[in-house]
Length: 78
Image (tube, rainbow, N blue to C red; front, top):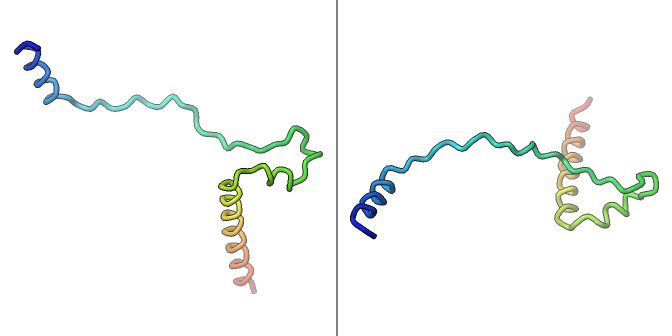
C-alpha cells in the first residue's frame, strides 16, 4: 500500500461518523394464532400436546398471573 493510500485510510478511520439508520420498513409483528384446520373437531388437549414445552411454560405462567390477580380482586370485594 502506498503512502497516499495509507494516509487516506488513516484519515477515513479517524473521521468516520455514524449516520442514523433509516426507518424500518419491516411490518409490525403480528400475534400468531393457533388454529386447527377445523376448529370444531379439535379438542384443547390436542392443541396443547403439540405445543413446545417452552410455550406451554409461558402459557402456564401467564395463566398463573391472571389467576393471582383474579383471586386478589375477589378478596378485596365486600
